[in-house]
Image (cartoon, rainbow, N blue to C red; front, side, top):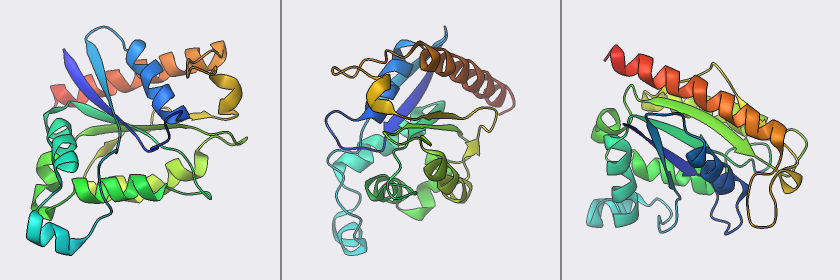
Length: 188
């Protein structure tokens, strides 16, 4: 079974992006599992802390899970038209020390999706992620993008995905991305 890691870029208890990852985990194609992770417990990056104490335990645990995985799905919120600071901060910790970048991220398939209360979904945030993904050596799957706008109407009060159109879009997204993961694993 191929193991994927899904990281939610939101710390909010009722995060639409964490809910979208949970829906994805429940809809994975046969032969794939998605482990939903968050950035809880990862402090603000501080080079002095890294130099004296190393990578914090929460970041080190997530980093090792990514290194063992077959691919990543980043569920990105969009704050002020860009990447949320907490998400970028988490990735910054996960890329430390720099000598670990290739082991953790190098040539690993990655996909982006996101949910937002706004009308454009997370188009700007997903676009802003692209240079970061290139810098880490990730293999970005550009075969499909999923932007979930008006997320408050797409999920119910318990965080369950209730919009049938988005459910189908998510299903198609996962079929495409898992095919990409399979293709990459055959060529590595």
